[in-house]
Every structure is written in C-alpha cells, then in structure tokens.
Image 1 (spheres, rainbow, N blue to C red):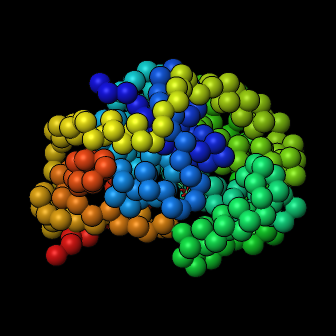
Image 2: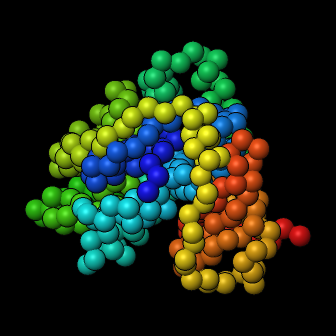
Length: 309
Ligand SMILES: N[C@@H](CCC(=O)N[C@@H](CS)C(=O)NCC(=O)O)C(=O)O
C-alpha cells in the first residue's frame, strides 16, 4: 500500500481528531502543512475544489471529511478498532453530534473577544482579519451563535459529557475507546488550548482526566512532506481499484458527470465522473494538470451530489 499522506495545519481541530487516531493505531504518516485560509492551490489541485481541512491522500486517492478518513484508517489498521461492534452505531452517531453541534458551540465560545489573540497562535492583526474574512466567506452568511448562547449550550454539553464518564467508564461509551472519543475530544481540545477560555472546563474533572488519556494516544509516527512532493505522488500513482456495490439513490449512473459538495458550509463543488456510490460514500474521478488523474472520495452523510449536464 502507498503511504498515508495527511494535509493539515496545527490548530485545526478536525486535524487533531485524525492525528490522535494515527496515534491510537500507531500509524506512520506523511505530514503536509497546508494554509489555514484560501487560496490553497496545492490542496484544490488534489481535491478539485474541496477546501476544508483535513484531507487524506493515498497515492492518487483523495479522502475528504474526517468521518470517511476514519473509516479508511479502520480498513488499513483494524486494531485497535474505532467502532467496537456493540457500540458501532452509537459511537458514530455521538461522533456526528460532536462534529457538528458540539464543534460549532466550541468554536462560537472560543472565538470570544477576550481570547482572540491566543486562538490562532502568533499571528498579526492583518492575518487575523484575513482569517475572519475567509471564514465569513466560507460560511456564506450562515448565522453564528452568540456568546451567551454558546456559553449556556457548552455548559450543558459539558455536564452531559461529565455524566458519561461518571459511572466508571474509562472512555465515553465504556471501557473501549471509539470514534466518539476522538470527535468529542477535538472540539474540547480547541477550547483547552486557549488559556483565556480553558477555565470553563475546570468544573469537569472527569472530562479533563479523560482528555489527558485521549491526548496520551499521541500522533503516531509523522514524517514531513512538502505539498509539491504530495502532488508528484498523486501524479505518478493510479487510483485504487473500486470493488464496491452500487447503491443508486439519485437516479444517476456510474460514469455520469456529477458535482459533489458539502451540505452545510464551504459549498465548493467537486466535478468529475461518478466512479463509486456505495452505502457509505461517493467518489469522483477527475484529472488535474499537476495532480494527474485522481479519485476524490466523500462520505454520504454531510454531502450532496447532483448531475452536471
Ligand atoms: N466535516 C468536516 C469538517 C472539517 C472542517 O470544518 N474543518 C475546518 C478546520 S478544523 C475547516 O475546514 N476550516 C476551513 C479551512 O481549513 O479551510 C470533517 O469532518 O472533516
């Protein structure tokens, strides 16, 4: 198998989710640093337009969204497992809540005026302004939670998380770690790393101790790679063979030209030939001048597909 190439940046919470899964599974991976804001020419050469972070690459296959990235890592390294059989459905459902409701509450709480300077590390006021403009454009006017609402909701979520840990569980759903731990963790990690706001977690000692335990998985075995090297890997590889069943819910055939994009924010379409639509994912084949022919994969949940005539 080709090596795992991971495109990310340090302060990205969703990237931290996957970095810890690399640690959990003790995986070796290539680390490609990407910009936190647009433009990201080397990322979109691989994805065809998808700009969110992180993205995982294996040869000429590009995987978007951490839910799908986690599934692929589970296939590559099944033990220790992210989806213990008795809680597979429950852990994925809790993870989906954490990646959406909890995440956006944590973001709205952390980006409060008192914390601004600590959130993105050592950046200039101009860079902060550019970041704000980039995210406003990415969210395209979607309403943002106010600080009082975010605070109240976060406190309720923290009480629920503390409760999950208060009956002798080591991890959120019992004795074994699952995808739910990594998804809940990354949202709280974003709060904890900013001293001006981290204090809200102090009233939840079981949550803090559980966070220490998840952090202790570490990040596996990363090794640096440049983005031009990653593009060259894609260009010289052929996409993996797809042997999955075809599940048609759109009246769209394999081979049709489609656009795939998220359903919530950063709605940049990726256009290509539909080469996979199974129970869990869509994949499109496209060709780029620098990346060559690649297959870009998306999970079904959180994404929409339309035919392009
Ligand atoms: N559902 C996506 C969410 C990814 C996401 O929103 N990531 C943030 C960074 S943590 C992002 O893309 N921000 C804009 C950017 O990096 O360009 C996933 O699970 O990968």
